[in-house]
Amino acid sequence: MLSEFPSAAVLARGQENELLLAPARQTSGGLSSQALAAETDRAAAPSPASDPVTGERLDGEEQNGAAEDEEPAGPPDGLPLDDSVRMWLREIGKTHLLNLDQEVRLAKRVERGDMEAKLILVEANLRLVVSIAKRYAGRGMSFPDLIQEGNIGLIRAVEKFDYRKGFKFSTYATWWVRQAITRAIADQGRTIRIPVHMVETINRLVKTSANLLQQLGREPTLDELAREMGTSIERVSEIIRIAPEPLSLETPVGEEEDSHLCDFVPDDENCTPGEHADRSVLRDRIEEVLSLLTDRERDVLKMRFGLDSEGCPHTLEEVGRHFRVTRERIRQIEAKALKKLRSPTRSSRLREYID
Image 1 (spheres, rainbow, N blue to C red):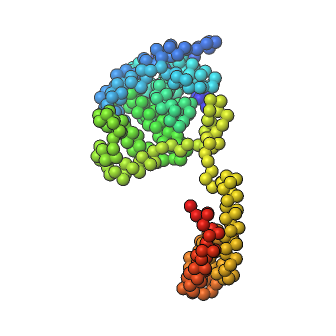
Image 2 (tube, rainbow, N blue to C red):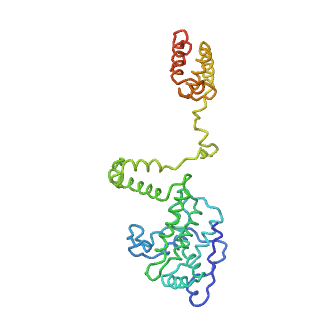
Image 3 (cartoon, rainbow, N blue to C red):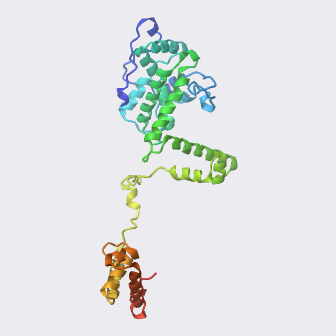
């Protein structure tokens, strides 16, 4: 649980620690959402033009080191949270942010195995995790779980951070936090798990479709999507088939949520009382007509058309094995029996049930 994560009350020791975190203030209140937003805005400085993890060039929000935490670090609007999570969010809002020099000094201590320095660096960037996590709210995982997964990515970033490259830590950590959250959503966010690479392919298809919709002013065709993605139409169709999230039959329905979706789904295997009565009469008529045949003819037709207790049609060979005769003999018996039933006086008893 989030409340189990260490608080920001790490006491400073020595000259280095004086530059770091102040103890958490024990107050009756906490930071308001506006104050939390203001604190979050200072969490990161502009980043270099390439991803420090992959070495690839960044684009859009990734080139802006502060892009991930320009919004308030509170929960997304309208998201219900219990009191323990709200207290935790207020607690991390009290943590002082670090400048580049402080990050370097902490990173050196982490490199020497100093666990206290590692903890301080993690706690000073918890708001960064919140600001990233809220971008992924509503994708199959609860907001606290998203934060927990992001915290795991943050810890990984602290362990891998190389201060010698000159990057600000928040820029470097953003990649690890985002990766941890997106991988967790891919693994746990769906009722039926889809491999991570397929989730990435689905996301790529969604982005491609949105771009083409903006360019063309209409929904793109399968052929246009396939050309844009450099794949086949069959592959695009398969991705579209896999993409939808299964809908639970227990999903609440209505303003008061006193009903469930399953209450409105018809059961095609069940019939109405009228249909049940018609079927009962039809069975009686069939038995009446079959009673005009010999015992063997009646048994052969029942097995061939699934009218016996098993309710499953059988092949000529299967019926032949049952009666210990050849399949040709069964075919002859069947043909003779059907010829008898086609006589006008007998078939008229069943004609009204033929649609």
